Each structure stands twice: as structure tokens, then as C-alpha cells.
Image (cartoon, rainbow, N blue to C red; front, side, top):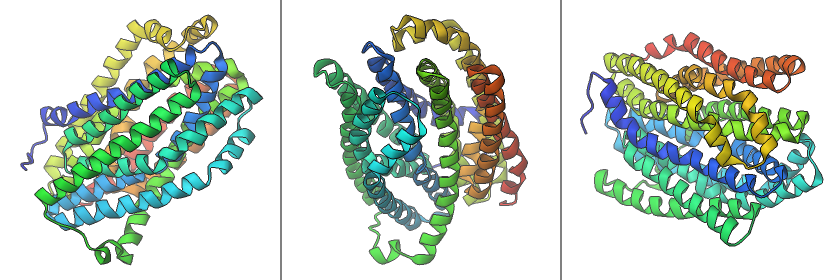
Length: 438
């Protein structure tokens, strides 16, 4: 495998293209689920799906360290030529993922209690949330293992394979959800069941293919005494715990939007759930550059190639910002069309028009913090991204409380814009620490 010293824009685009297409499938799942619920004749389905998916996403994304920690360690091990380290790290993280998945499932009733206590909604909406959670939470083992597998392939800069995994999961999710909701009339059960079945189908296929990939390219079968090494596990937990806290704060920041929307009223909760789909679409596109940069950065650090690192940083920032601008232009021209596909409830469509400015402004501004995340993850500078996120979320919450009191729902979206800016500024402050690795 050849890795250029001069990391050009073309090379980053080449790695990012498969991730673009895979990430296009991810928001489609959210769009389809929102569209299915938005056409059932009541905003309660949208509200319930918004809260339930936000909470489940917060929980699962909190274990995003399984992907991010895997990418950093695997890519740096690849740079050093440590193939056994690559395999052992991957197997170790899969076992850790299964352990946490069982804990998540065992805490199902605690999660439901938290939702009932935290969100102000009708009893009917709470019942719909309960139906969704009881099914969807069963996908935890499969989804956490997928995080590790995606991290494994991103760390090897095999972005096509990681993207194929994500795409298969998303497409089967969409097909099954549509079938269960429209053909079998399972309602909110249907979208949850579609996700669970597609997750297990995908992870079984890719666990088998990953086994044969490792056997062919590395010819290494890790022994249990190599996997359960106390020093290695403690190091992995240190890295993973930093990313866990970072991701927990990040997902809480997005959970804060439906929480505040519920306090303003279920109409605003429904509107914000629709508008968040636009933000998620943009983030998945912008994350393509961040994901591809993770592997490049880790490899450059493993090889001590400072020039490659700086080229990757500069070119990825430029590409990400330009893409953010393109997304904003697309939203300007197609906002009304996209809204119309998500719901046929007229007053929700009308109210959402007043918030188009935020979904236009956020993508190019957010491109910087997304790209910084990829750089710090590839460098395994996990303490810095943890501190940056904690500072950013605290300021974001304080800003939002003040702004909502003065600007209502517009204040919530303005505070989200500030949140993206603060993340970029704090990560830029820590950036010189990465240069000390060379």
C-alpha cells in the first residue's frame, strides 16, 4: 500500500468519495423514518420518534470511541508496520463493545424513566416512545461492533470497505422500515424493527469478511493472553474514556434541542426534529473529509511525516469549507421541496419556513470543527478534544438559556451556531500540541 508524502486535495477526495456516498445513505434513514412518521396524521409520531431516536443516538454515539479510538491506534500502527497491534486492538475493542452493549440493554427501563422525567410530553407520546425504545435498544451489540469495524477499515485507509458497511446497513434499514410501516402497518414499531434487523444482518456479513481479510493480509490470529493485557487495556480505556466523555457531551448538545423544543411546545419539538435532519445531512457530508483525514493523520504521525500531516490538514480544511458552502446553496434552492417530503402537516411546513436561515448558515461554519475532530482523533489527542467539547457544551447551554428567553426557538438555533464556532476556536487553541508529535 503506497501512501504519498504530499497529501493532495485529489488524494483526500479519492479517499472521501466512498464515504460521501455512504454518508448520503445515513441521513436518508433519518429522512425516511421522519417521512414515515410525518405522514401518519399526527405530530405525536414525529415528536415520539424525535425524542426516542435522539436518546438512543446519544447513548450509542457516546460509545463512538469504539470507532474513533480504533482509527487512531490502527492508523498509527499501520504507519509503524505493527500488524499484530492492528488485529489485537480491533478484537479487543469488539469485546469491549459487546460488554457495553449488554449493559445498555440491561438499563432499558432506566432509560425510559429518564425520558419520562426529562421530556414534557403527552401520555400518548410517551407510550409511542416506549414502543420504539423496547425494540430499538436490542440493536446495541450489532451497532457497537459496527463502530469498531468502521474504525478498523478507516484506520487502514480502506474507505470503500467502511463505506460499503455503512451503506448496506442504511439501505437494508430503509427497505425494512418502509416494508414494516407501509405494508405491515406496524407504525413506530416498524421503524425500530427495521433498524434492529438491518444492524444484525450487516454486522454478521462484515464480521465474516473482516476475518478473511485479516487472515489473507496479516495472517495473524490473536491469542487471548495478547488481547487481555492489563497495560494495553488501561491505555485503551484512557483513550476511549476521553472520547466517551467528548461524545457524551456532543450528543447531549444535540439532545438539548428536542428538550428545549418540548418545553416550547410539541409543535416546536416536531419542527426542530425536521430541521435537525438538515444539520445531520450536512454533518455526514462534511464528516467524509474528517473520516478520511483520520487515517491519513494517524499514518503520517506513525511515519513521522510532518509534511504529509500539514498538507492533509490544509487541504482537508479547504475542501470541507467549500463543501459546506455548496450544501448551503442546495438548501437555499431545495428547502421547501425537502420539507414537503418530510411531512404533509401544513402548519408544520409553514412554521418551518421561518427557520431556513439557520440550516443555511450552519454547514460552512460547522465545517471547521468537524475537520478539527478528524485531525485530533487521527492523532489520538483525546484529552484535548474532550476538554474542547466540555467547554463548548457548557457555554452553549448558557448561551441557549439566555437566548431562548429573548428569542424563543430562534435563540436555540443561534446558540447551536455559537456552539460550532466555540468548538473550532478551542480545538485551534490545542492544535500546536499535535505538532509536538513530530
